[in-house]
Every structure is written in C-alpha cells, then in structure tokens.
Image 1 (tube, rainbow, N blue to C red):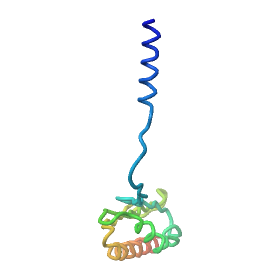
Image 2: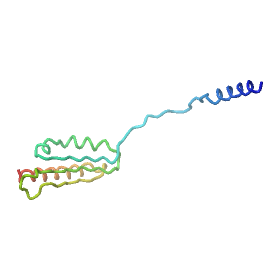
Image 3: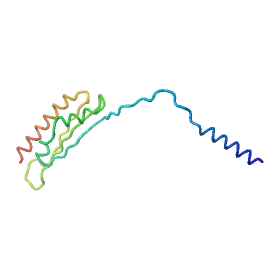
Image 4: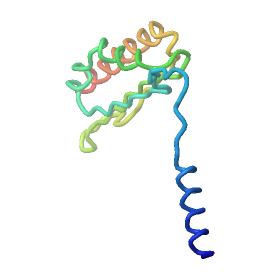
Length: 122
C-alpha cells in the first residue's frame, strides 16, 4: 500500500511540476548588428587590387554597430624569384564605424599607394 501511495504522490508531483505558465508580455524582435569588423586582402597581383570596389567595401563596414572599431588590411606579396627591393609588405587602415567617410578616404589613399607600388615594380 505504501508503494501505491508513493507512486500516486510522485505522479501528481511530476505532472504539476511539468505544467508551464503562459507568457505574459510582449515579444520584441531584435536587430542583429555586428561589431569589430575587419577585412584582410592578400594580393599577389595588381589585378586583385584594381577589382576591389569602394562601394562594396563601404557596404561591408556599414553593417557594423555604431561606435565600433573597423579595419582593412592589404597584404601584398611578390614572387620570391624576382629581384625586388620589397617583396612583401602590409598596410592596415583602422577607424571607427561612426567616421566611415574618413575611413573610406584613408582606404582610397592606401589603395592608390598599393597600385603605385605594383606599377613601379611590375
């Protein structure tokens, strides 16, 4: 008889504990924003740099949250067999997502510098 009472008590206890309470309130949709965006481009030729579109780069960084750090890094590599004074170098531009226009002007200057490097050392 004890086991029957224990079994019924446990059954009632589990069924009461398994009940869920209804949710009261509002469910809000949240907007997902990214932060601390960085892009690294490894280029071994001038063609890869020239195909880089400024509007595409701007679109990447516009998706970041306000007041977040952003960066773009160029990594340029020349063939080891050629006799160049500079074979490998990198150029990194850092900025803030609130100052995207300043960041893009720095990006354009860096892109021109790298194009000049490849044109001087074909």
